[in-house]
Length: 156
Image (cartoon, rainbow, N blue to C red):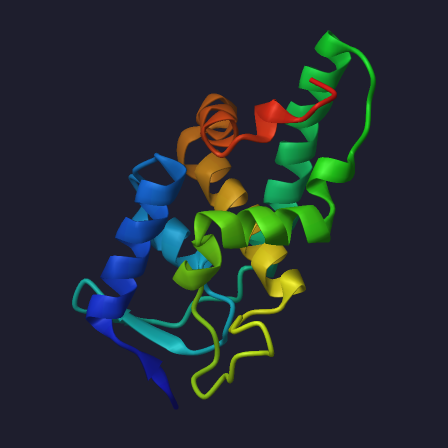
């Protein structure tokens, strides 16, 4: 079984927290949100076999959509384009959040030098949002979304 390095896990959690301006109380939620592979991760002296971040991504997608819908409702015209995979992947890359994701060892970069596909980058963004929601609630998710610029959509 391949493994991710301990220092790598801790540094990816720290990097993610800095990028989103949120500190997780439950670090394993962040670790699971960053888990785009099925590989075991050694963190805080223990091996963790965490599920891929897909379930957290579904939760994050739903709550991000709910927050954006409320903002749009309050401001006027409605357009969900900010949450499509292409937009989420672009924002993930802009923030370098895609670099925090755990990918299968041996993954080669694509022609653009990306180690993760747009789908994986978007799923990672949604999973981090889901983890923030579980860890801190909707108000913390809303703060993170504002920090990441989701409130800067031209329709808001």
